[in-house]
Image 1 (spheres, rainbow, N blue to C red):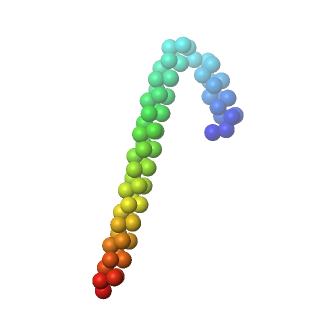
Image 2: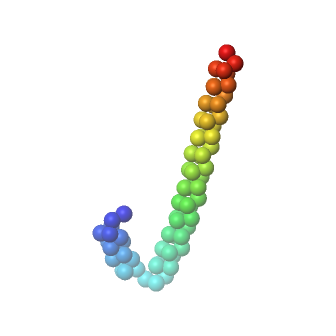
Image 3: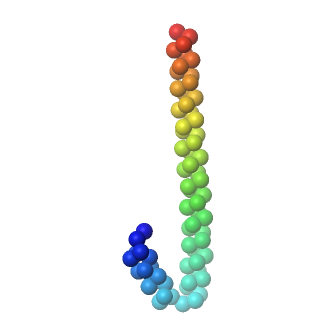
Length: 67
């Protein structure tokens, strides 16, 4: 995200009440947590896919050696 977008968002936030800002803060924390969890899930998925690919390659090599 570029600085202009950040400044625009902060400008909009300046118009909110304290209560609205507190709620926004809570919502952003929840969103950030979900994004971090999703990143971990994605990394784990990539890792499993890589391991599976390596295992399949190893298995194919083993089959080729036995042929």
